[in-house]
Length: 333
Ligand code: ASP
Image (tube, rainbow, N blue to C red; front, side, top):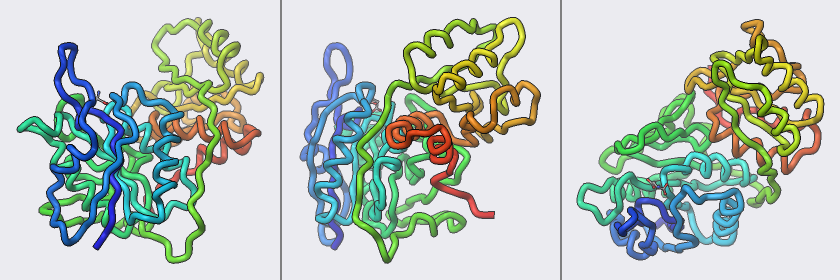
């Protein structure tokens, strides 16, 4: 018999309709009632720790969630977090980096429609999340529309459809059909629980003085003067494989100035798939390789969480760079 704790944080799954629109209101007890799982294979408990639209999620609240899991870690075999879909990918990535020595599954789920609506996807997603939380795996994952997606690889790509999430630059870890879990055998091993493990730890520090800038053609360079004054780090969504303009509007020059003053610069791309690569184009070689973080094929949500946590826990650009550039998941071969 497995023990699973369901932690409620809000989102559409917990929402009811009000004059201004949907608002999270249901307590976890009302949500758990819908889980469709035989009582003799799993004992379920629930806790509501916040009830927010995930639009209002903050790094502080990631740590509230993490601390609850730490508090109940020994009592349960797996954890499910119900969460709004809009910032779910950020929370999934953040929890991956906040926990150290995690050896149990944490499955984040939610729905596109409230669990009390007859066309809801909430019952399926929540029930399947519980099935995944009973598996002997470790890591933070998103469970949505039958897919189990690594927490560092998920992106919300649709605002209304049931298949709202995509696994970016990495295979879906597993699917569930008729309550049977089927893994992608190429990557399963890295998610199996360890036999010899150390106690769970939480990284408690982060730096949220960062922002994401998406370059546009003809962008004015003066925004980088503002960033230099007010921020400690910036994630740049450049063009294609890593292109940064160096003509009339010399953005590359400005970013070099930021790097010189010690601001953390992470170079990523506006393309969802296949990532950045330093040095393929001249316009992709204008920043110093050793002081710029080259984001590889990580999605922006993951970079936001990882950069905040890296900047809170490491002091030198060398250490921050090493931590961010190292992939958490890998595709063998
Ligand atoms: N706005 C909602 C939220 O992120 C959307 C959802 O849960 O699907 O909380």
